[in-house]
Length: 275
Length: 167
Image 1 (cartoon, rainbow over the protein chains, first blue to last red):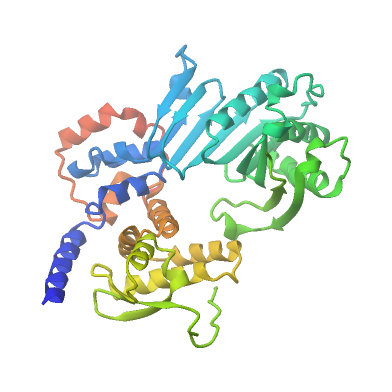
Image 2: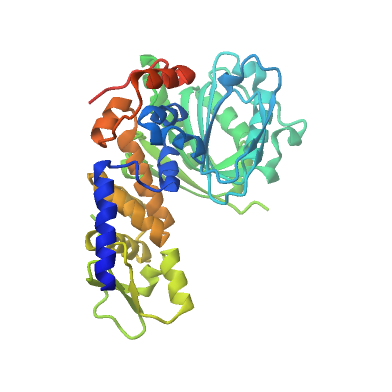
């Protein structure tokens, strides 16, 4: 008897759901699904039908595109997002962010581009990167960088270590994707600076953005540089972070671990527990 | 494809649980797999009941969830293998199947699978025009053309520079 009632109820539920394959899902599930879409795409769902008008507005994801704030002289933002799952950041880190959340499991995807004048403002760039990462330190961080670092030289070995957050305060992040112009020496210098700020558990090449054709050829080099720095060179004096790096391994053509993004290789780094 | 490593008949040491679907079929699941679901874990902690009746999950969906739990409870499998199992698990599944899966994982509180399935559902919708989504999911557009145009005008930025395929 009980079973019959259950079955009948279930049939009703499934019948009404079959009329429309998606709208009747519970709101929290719809919010969860929409959190994987870009803000634009999520907003577009508002015209699907009347019941979709405001569904997107409660998705637990925020796309913070700094371009939106161009012309706004206020360069700090406080974000209150109690149930956040995904935070996407894109810009030039000229805004300082204060993040408040009670969420325990969330991801930050940070996407930064640096072109011609990187050399000029590199020192403040690392400083701002460090600040941004610290403000998101409660999340699982993926950092994607597109750089033009051909002429980047090591910032004078470090007059004030605190500018970069210091060795002992470098933040462990989940993923670092790289792409751009580098030369062998500029890449070493760049990684040396970057590792003062953060220590990635995985390093790969982001490959899925279209750019000029000649980039691809130059980027073939990136993997060689990484192999050289991470796997071959053992000079402690050149690479201060070496003492914290316990293990490095490399996979090639690992499509299965990051599907759809066409990543060609991944380095896995195991860092000594930083206190 | 990953298969779980069967270690012969269940010994007395390895505890197991019986889970019954709403269709009445029963599934034998190791306790280590069952507790990956927060809801089942709670039930098992509260009472020593070895038979759990799930009144709103059907056979097909429950079998899939259990296959997932068993794979993830297998200590012999590396994280990479589990991750590729996850990808294979959702690939090629129809939206309806995913819908019941996401509901089941929500009920059972299997966070990782819920994440994987919801992401897959979003991937299906990604880069699609509104018209495609309406057609694919049989959503009845109950806006008047004027009302829809007004809403699009309010959030005009969301429809800027779009180059999406309507396949």
